[in-house]
Length: 301
Image (cartoon, rainbow, N blue to C red; front, top):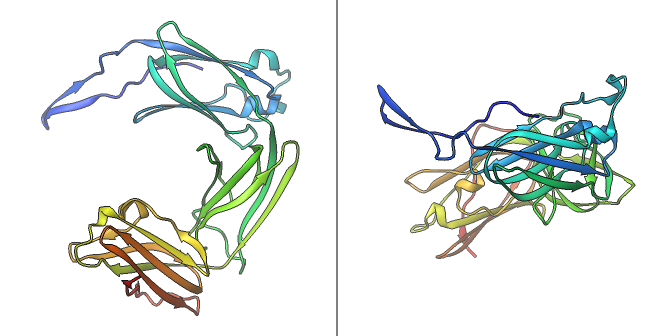
């Protein structure tokens, strides 16, 4: 794995006379070597590296085909050594993912790369498999799915399709999923056991895209409050830091709104602020969108 070395540059000056400022370490690159142990041939072929430094992200794809069956002969010992030959020097946070979910996700942490290079041993973790399916109760096709698993250490495993089978490091994980056709799933717990396959059939109520809206109480700053929404007691919108982090648009008149999939049910909206807490409760029935926003009337808690 190698090639061009990309650097983040600053563009300054006038529109018609721009000036590109390159970083001080331009041209200084090192070699990052990952010595992989305990991975089988399919996992090695699926191994994909992401190296992040600030806003810079390098994606290093595997050299081997995704299906090792395409090869007449696969040299597993040679493939265990992955050399990334053209990476700018500096501190990088390195992650591993599987292109097809065959290789387990890993967080290798912060690595300091110098011109002399850096060699790191990567041990395959104890791992199992998750066979999953996300579906709507009424049989509607799942559209614009965003789903992943997360654990307490911050590792993530992307779920790219509505159904599939992925390799997951053993342990306790939480599932997060959203779509335009069902309410968000926030933190459903899943246990993955090493050497075993866990099955998850997630059947969700049909939702419709609606605008949820409310007016901020007087004196409340949009950036200094947190909002939470639950449907039938289960969270569908988490507490972000500020309304923007939770996806809300807000105007100078205090009107706040967000577009999200809402299903029939009993809802409770909570707003936490430095001036006090407010809440609103409402019901949605009928499963249709009349084009009007769902306006929640907040009152002090």
